[in-house]
Length: 318
Image (tube, rainbow, N blue to C red; front, side):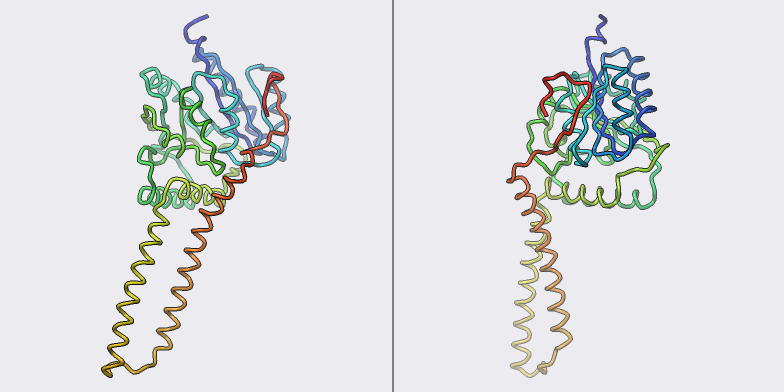
């Protein structure tokens, strides 16, 4: 056995309705990993697909023992799927790809080289990618906001790929959060990190299930999990408005007493009430987001539920 064959790579692939992509994705991964000469495993996680994704993946696993399949009981999201794949992975290192293979797996030798230099977490950062206009606008707003109010200096901008050493994998599996933003959790862990500029491709088949609503949900999870700044901004606004209201109240009292102001002001009163009412609703909603996540964590429900598996030994622990 060569030195490379002694090293095992784990490829994690979350899937959702990818019946048109799963076979080309497997073939591309197989050809690349065999060419590199490492031992490898492909862990496919079906996130509640409604098409033939699971059946086609089982057929692949039936013909290639290096492929293993996990089927979720329903859709739990890509970050839960990634966690489930990491939990059963056996590699010295691991990385995640989508079944559409937009990730830069052809640059994998560059990541392995950095890993050989002692880096334990290597980020793949977008240097170029053609996205729809709305997606690009949303991504730009998200990154600018997170730069301003976030607390993770180690998380690179435009990150979309992560290569993890076994130490990093073991560490992230110890984090119990249910509302997970895996990239943020990886950055929080620390370890020796670096990044590689990458070009990301476009989806060739099928339609992406990564909708705008899911992007917004991920953004909310990110801000509430890794930043206390929204709460502090609200507190500062409350103090500022209270101070200005006090000054304005003094001005009104003095003005009425000295005859400067005639007691009218219905329009001003209504505008003030509407503004403060809207602000209170925003603040209540923000506090509710934090409170709901605290309740969600306190319930202690599992991060995901596995319906069935294929290609694993009987010792697989659901």
